[in-house]
Amino acid sequence: MSQPPEEDLQGVAARALPNRRRSGLVCFLAAICLVAAPAGAQRNKNVAPRADKVLLAHWRTACERVRDGDPWSEIADGLQSAIDATDVDRVHPDISMYLDALRAAAREAGDLPQNRPGASPEELVSLLTQSHVIQGQRGFDGLLFAPLHVHAESSTVTRMHWNQLADQPEHEFTDPAIRVLHRERDIIPHLIAALDDRTATRCTFVRPATSTNPSDMYLRGELAMALLEALAKCRFYVSERYKRFVHHDDAKRREAIALAESWWQTASEMTPLDARSQLISRVAYEHAAEMINLLVIENHTERAVSHLRAFLIQDDGSVRLEAARSLVALGDQSPLAAIVRQVREEKKITDQEARLLVAEGGNREYRLLRELLGEGLEAVPGDQVIAARNILRGITLALESRMAIPLLAIALDPQDTTTIGTGVAREIQELLPDGGATRADLAAALIQQETRRNFRYDAEAEPEFRRKGIARIRDWWEREGSAVYRFENARSRRGDGIR
Image (cartoon, helix red, strand yellow):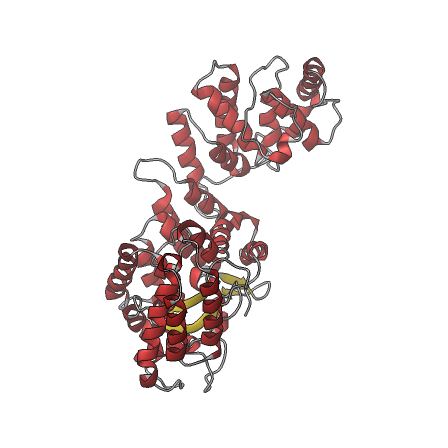
């Protein structure tokens, strides 16, 4: 199996969701793809000393021997000799860790059970040292970094990659990791017991000879963690700075292992779905988001909505925008009301909150935005001006909404001198005058673009001629545009629930 490139994964995620309104959840999978791809490179860039080139080359050869099945003890002895010949300050810490992992594999090599269909759970976990499930190419390690990642097999079938790999019969050459997947829940406690196991496996990624980072050899504990997460459809840790599980500090790993242990103490008596919910309810939103997304993909929509609603309001009383987006994408409009209440109370709004209200809101949201925008355009610098600016920026991110043009029209003041500032997307910035585009410039340029009418507004013209163009657009709006593009009653939305 090969992992699709990052840009394809986002397309896969989009196809996995039933309709456009679920696009808000794709961000979870996109984030997973970013974790899966650059893992080793990012970590080494941040923490690794300069490694001896000769030692890197020797370790690269050692990884090839690991992959090819050479005796563990011979590989370890050769690596030890190379380390002994190297300045200790130039030995990459991973290589020292890998040497210990090779020694551990060598010590148990003669005691491994036979890889067979009837192997016990304990035997299968020990046999993970013989696994080749990750081999040879960047992309396979996504099975470790993103064990819940899914792939669209067809227009109607979307499944996790691990589940796809499990679709093979048992025979004498079946990879031990695949046998683990076939055992399902009865093997979970044995995987948990192996999470801190740093014994080598035959899973490797051999880097190009030109790389200044060591090739990767994956350890039994991290393979056990990925298999546990794939079987349970849970995540027990969130990677920091794209690090592999074995590269986190002891405290972080102990925390993840303790979470898995305590979860299983109660989850073992639950249905698999309830067990997943039990973990989701125990962790922070950033930890739970990927698990909730998998519930959506598997059509457990009501359960996903229930979890998202529990995360919607943060400890400080503010609306968690990520959960709000996901709820709205699932047809639950209640977060819009929560955002409206928050904005009315605080008289503040972010561009992303405005974007969501513009893209998904109805008359209630339109009235709020129109009110805040009008007040902000007339106010002296302060919170109201900032709110107006953020609303305009939010509109630029939701131009396909029927609300966009009516709101932009409010900003058509030829005498406006307040600039829109930085933070506008590049494709929008290209429509605006260089150096100091006003809010009215933004409104005029976008209305001209979106209506496909030539009002002779020219962003490259002098300010006097731009003002005349703005005035022409405002005159058109007052005479006929407002009747064509008015928003009120254009569509109605339910206040809450799933549509």
